[in-house]
Image (cartoon, rainbow, N blue to C red):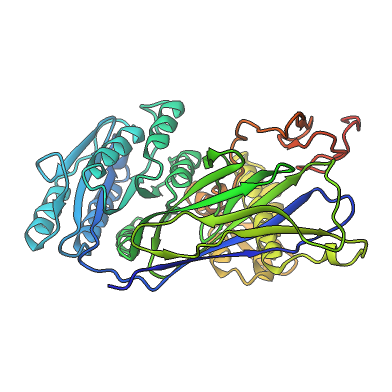
Length: 470
């Protein structure tokens, strides 16, 4: 059996101007060469919303049953699996015993029969479903663990604080992809699930496409060869990690998911990895304003490395994130192509979100303005996926100029399909700050960012400190 090989790369423009006190770098993590074999155990849990709202329209629960059956059909022999009926409780409808069962021709047939009997009645408590999945996965500690959660409604039988507590207990134990169907679900809830459990989140506009989506999710999960990969990030006495964000393939701000493991050392769970997979992470560092620039030579500002993973070979050397101050005005203005790409991607996400907020507020003109700008940005980036989603809510008059008209037949479901990819990119709530030694950070009056002590400008919005707020 060929072991997967993990590699890490750092991409940045290391040059800094005299007054620069921040650095952005893209850290790329790559997995190659592993084999998916019978020796590797996989575990799958399907969580199907069976609350009362799934009855309307009647196609919804029917397509959910069909999607669950499609996912079951693609499970290879030997995979351990279970199906959970989600209401205000979590009930394992297959197998009969409260545990996972090994996939075979016989058990797949029994599971399909069980999901055909699913009925929609009850409330919605996603935390209970996730708790059940966590407990089921506990019995498969060495497996690559994956779950799918489908819902059409809000988490009305549980507080958000309770859901967050459950998510914290599940983090790193399994990956969960989440899907919203219909137009009654809450994006913030599903994106939080996807962010903490490192899964993919999306909406389903057409019910009859759900089965294909479930099938693809399971097939993708079955390519995973490593249950968990972890990234370690170290800072220097004069530097601090402002944020870390996964920017490819899915976008999540993961700053508050970092775990402090030593002085100035953090670890971040990246979730499970496939045998051929690449992910990119954006790191932003703040530097002590009293730091003396080092001209003519590189200075290490931080470092990053992969935590050793059982069953995989990995780059053993930590890679530095460096900085070099220069009097030459040109080099600091040259943005690294990868940094530029993901900055443009963030701008597009902001336009999608702002358009969705305007649409929800009934402001047609603002929705057209923001979504028109999104069309222009997506066109410039040849982003066909985003343009396809936008076509469900707007008619494009002039793509390059960003002139659009709202579609009269657009629904909230179509709007959610546009907004959901940008929602996962939103900045997480700031974690408790770790100030520089003997220095307190400065809070901005107009944005939530914290800047290093002594800073003249806010690192978040650029407003000079001391400037009156109009």
